[in-house]
Structures are given as C-alpha cells and as structure tokens.
Length: 195
Image (cartoon, rainbow, N blue to C red; front, side):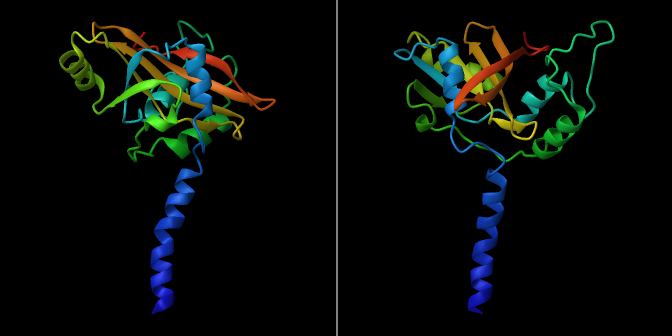
C-alpha cells in the first residue's frame, strides 16, 4: 500500500517535469531581446500575464495555419532566411502545437522592467488598458509567448506583440540562438496578418 501511494504521488511530478523540460529554465533570452527594443526601464508598461499561445509563433514561422509550410506563389520569398527545415519544423510543430496549458508571466521573469501584469487577451486587454489606465500615461502593453526550442535546441522562437490603447502596434516572431554564452537575435519576422 505504501508503494502505491508513492507511485501515485510521483506520477504527476514526473508528468509535470517532462512537460516543462521542453521550455527554457530562465527567460534570459527574452530579457536580452527586450534590451534590443529600447524599452524604457523607468517607465511603467503593461504585460499580459497570460503567455501568448504557441500557435501564434508557429503560425508566423510557418507562414500559415497548420503543419504544412505555406509559401505564397506570388511572393516566393523565404521570410525565415533559410531557417525553415521541414524535418525540424515538423518536430517543432508536433511538440508544441497542442500544448494549450495556460502559463503566466511573473514580475520576477523580467526583473529589470517595471511591468504591471494584467489578465485578459486581445480586445479584452485593450479594453482594460483603455478603461483602467486612461489618463495615467500608461497606454502600451506587451504580449509574449513561452520560448520554444527549434532545430535540435539550437534556436528558440517566441512571439512578441506590442500594442497601444490608441490602436495599432506590431506582432513579431523572434528567433534567437546562444553563441559564446550570449543570446543573439537571429531574425525578427513580422506577422503577415497583423502588421
């Protein structure tokens, strides 16, 4: 009976530890990327506390929804700069597309930034920013997805959206890799729908 209790207690721990191993242990690369965006660290910004779904980053990288790589016949430009490799894309897609477990950002994930965490997504978050922060000078928010490993863990990919209560903004896929113990931005791909 004691062994059954131990097994029952260990199974959820094992499942959770396996699930989280496909993600980074720290958010150093996102912090490095934020540095490149020249975000004022003394100013208060809003960060959507719900991490953006993986599907967003996958869609931008792939050029369309689903597992099949889409290339526009009228514009055959490879916006991934050769980073799309079918074998590695299929593995990335299979590993991350169905991961719909909700994850949340914490202030500790971005210690150098003055982020206010707000719940809500899309238009709901826009409404919160307009209603709650009108007249405060806070009108900008960010939405970031969990970084995903790609190409034998050589690269990470994540989506980064910057929006404004007055409307507009930009949505991008960020591709980074670690070289000589330093995270480097390899490519920032604009969202073909949003931008």
